[in-house]
Length: 159
Image (tube, rainbow, N blue to C red):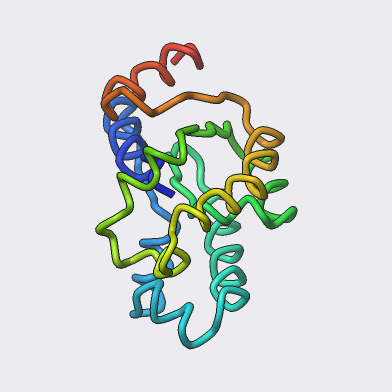
């Protein structure tokens, strides 16, 4: 959360003249409800099932840039699909940056707690090894604009 997946993904897609998809936005559009509501009604498990279906469908497309939800890597099935069907870029950032970038965002159900930093630290401990495992490329996003990061990705991937 707060690494810049959606913002950087949009820049990357625009620069490469590709279609951009955000799995969270697709879930909201298809369900007619926001992520927070889905979490409230179906719990995280229900949301993750929806997420896996959407990512499966989107990764069957060719010539797209896909920003996935931060927790999607927790599913081995999703990791396998991402890895087999495209190039996976892990946008790495610090907990401090995540806190700063998400502190006013009420649309992140996992962070609607008294101590969001604690949640982010726990999620990093669980997810970071999974991101590292599935990534074809790791890029730091801490001190750079989204456009600069998108340029770095293009350069490193040789596009």
